[in-house]
Amino acid sequence: MKPLVMTLAALALLLAVAQPGAAETIKIGTLAPKGSPWHKAIQDMAEAWKKESKGKIRVRIYAGGVSGDEPDMVRKMRIGQLHAAAMTGAGLMSIAHEIQALQMPMMLRSDQELDYVRERMAPRLEGALAAKGFIVLNWVDAGWVYFFTKKPVVTLDDLRPLKLFAWVGETAHIGGWRDAGFHPVPLPATEIHTALQSGLIQALPTTPVAALSFQWFGQVKHMTDVKWAPLVGATVISKRKWRRIPKALRTGMMTTARVVGKRLQGSIRTLGVKAVKVMKKYGLQVHAVPPKAVVQWEKGARKGYGSIIGKIVPADAVAEVERLRDEFRAKLKGR
Image (cartoon, rainbow, N blue to C red; front, top):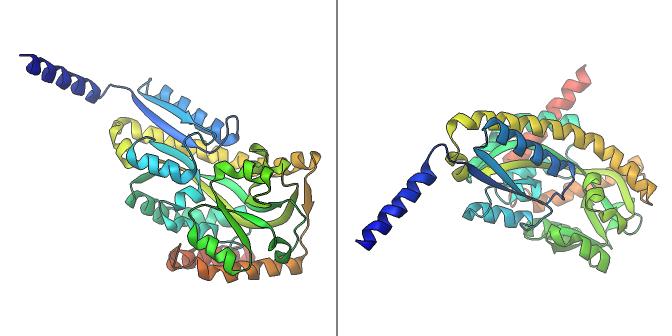
């Protein structure tokens, strides 16, 4: 009799969990620190979801890297410890390598170029992520990557002697830097602050908003004024979790996520300029790069493509980004 009672109790519990009206909790991780624009955007999305679903959707936010580095978050989403994450291109690339096509060094020059290319590449990129089990809720800019260093850097030769942060696990990228005569130091992003303090790294490719938000600029007080690459980002959720959410709620949730992402994108671009102004007040020195030196940066970036294309990122994806970029430039020139 006792086993029968226990079986019935377990069945009742399962039925209760499976009820369509039961609340669904979504655990979202991000490296973004509390109070940062990215964190606030996730909070806005979470509040809207809760309101729209009348409490059926709840969100727990794990900010500031408490869930680990971005590759850790991807691993945790795959095993169900996390359900979603707001990540940069570095984390997205660990899911689908096609993402790197948008972040090729010195390939794009402006937000307008990025918008034009990404809008047309989005179906392919979202398809690649979906094939790996993830749904894109929104695309969000993280800003343009610049080099923040402990010594003034104007040319590539100035950068070569410095110990340069590189994302741990990006083997081909790291090999590319080494082949070009640089000194990459592979680390998780969660260890950047400590590594800067100890001198383990002396140069950091990152965005102005991130440098300010994480207070990294206090250790690297020189910024090279050349856009190395856009750092794209997205909020993704595992397909498994997404399918647990009632269909009636998904459309509204997706719409809200896209609206929040678009709003954040606009604010990040404005904040990038403001962040540089704020950091300059606290000692950041911005070093202009003459046009001839910019050409050398572009040539140096191109030399590194051989270590990436076909090894990290599909060659046809890079070719498509380049084609769309040239298409945009031709339209702009024709106006």
